[in-house]
Image 1: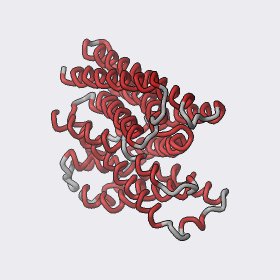
Image 2: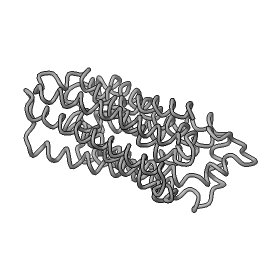
Image 3: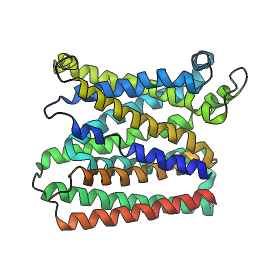
Image 4: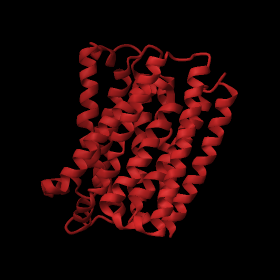
Amino acid sequence: MTTGLMLIVLGALCGGSFGLPSKFVRKGTPWETLWGPFFFFATILLPLLAGPALVKDLFGLCGSLTPSQWIGPVVFGFLWGLGSMTLGLSFAFVGLSLAYAINYGVQIAFGMIVPALIFTPSVFGTAKGAMMLGGAAVCILGVVASGKAALLKELSGSAAQAPRKLGKGIAVAVISGVLCACYALAFGFGGDVMKQASAAPFDNPGWRASFAVTALALWGGSLSACGYCAQQLTANKTWCTLVGPGVLPVYAIAFAMALLHDGAIACFGVGSPMLGALGVSVGYAIFMSLAIFTGTVNGFLTGEWRGADTRAVHGIRLALAILVVGVCILACANAM
């Protein structure tokens, strides 16, 4: 269980940082020129390269699955891909700190409570369930405080955004949070895939079998995320920017983002089963809370909070402290 928790923490550090390299892309680079390659690397290339090395006979396994086995991970992966795409949009609208706070806050609520209601509903009638809900409530309180502080920063800083653009960005971040939470459901419905991957003739140990579900979810996500980026490249007539001068640094940034992104979900995929029956739900809440913490710190490091109102700075510090308390409660609940 300790190893699983450590993997969740490592994954959260990667998840809260995958948007950080995007801050260093050349000004004026079209959104789809960065995020198109990122989604290609993250959802197609890396799973194709790493998947066969991690899962014995991955493609043979995928070919042996029945529709009832793969449909859940792929469909919820498709919805997660939509969420990841809209999260990328929200970074551009409202910055790392506010986008992470809103998106991941919504994910805590949906990603923890919904899988538990589906797979282990009886837990809510126990002391463990009560502590889970209490920990989630504290985390959501921290998210609200984080979002309020980040919103105050956006409205009072030297580069305050127009209310209309800010409102649009907040709405996009909320929608992306609901959709991104489908990744937890992709894993929740991946139990049969893991069983088949662990059985003969594949004989993958549990931690390797989890990567089969990861691959299916990512390939499902590629249909939505890469599809949207292709549509934007076509609509904006920006395909030429993928081969123009100075594009190599953009590819490097996109690849770095993809490594952090896939590292995060790989750590979650391996670590959550180690936390027991409630690993998906409790692990997801811990993962998201620590990712918000990391994303906010990265916002500080990249100057998003420079010149912000003193109340906003104090507010975000308080929010981070609340998130730490919430994570500790969830960790205790999982240990019960």
